[in-house]
Length: 328
Image (cartoon, rainbow, N blue to C red; front, side, top):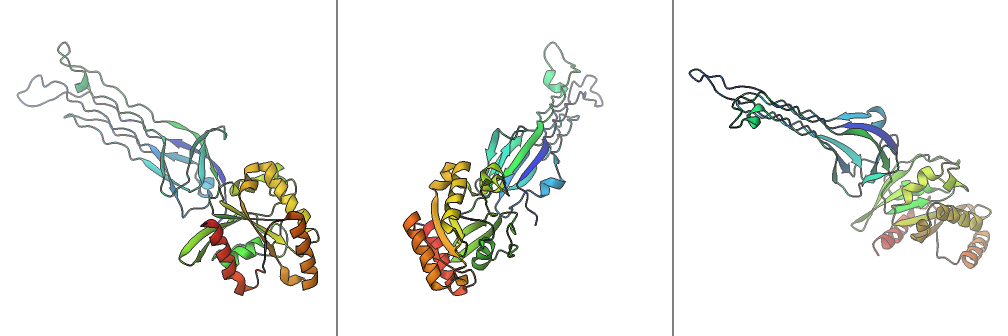
């Protein structure tokens, strides 16, 4: 399924039904009086969040949504039926903005949340409503009111327990594929991943959600590379898993570079719990590996784990580390 994290759609609630200007007509009753009923209320437009959705792609092909109009009133004081509400399902993590794409209307953070975004029009009144002691045969009725209508922007920010970040080709997609059932595209060249991928880790009767974020490069906070389009997807992650290709020449520089990009985009990202994994250790001899890791430990002074995504025996240990940090 293709990934889309932003869409502009037009929504229109239903108009209310008009009232009826009808008079009672029965045999032997010459002046039956008014009996026109009210119209029905217009249907509203309602968003509902769904955890099984993870893209806004459906809104690329269908951009106009309209709820049902209310029905007109009729004789014998019959009220018109209300128009049916229109329920639009969106992924958990969707934010609804006004047409300026800046003013937040609602933020869906939980499964099965509902938000009434456009209210249906009120019903019109039938002529029976206007009968009085001075007006026994009113012909007046009122029309139903139009429903609310406007453009809105939908923006999706993935909600995951762990966001996997790193430079391009660090092995993020391979890691996700090894410890979850996700099937991201994997290849040995930069920017293989151009959309966030989600996967679920299950271990010891617990589960957590991981998001593989496309590789970040210097200037990402300004939109360079695949840039800030994807940085927003880690804003909601509880933990950042920083995956580093230990076979690269400057692992310290690469690490600090990415931390700067996170800070320049949103300093709160650097305050999240961080797990550091060094990947591709199998590509190096032990002496060279130890030298790099010792230098990193002295300069950066942070704990880390050494892994290889091709060593399936260590996958359970990786799961344990992730679960420990999420559930601590």
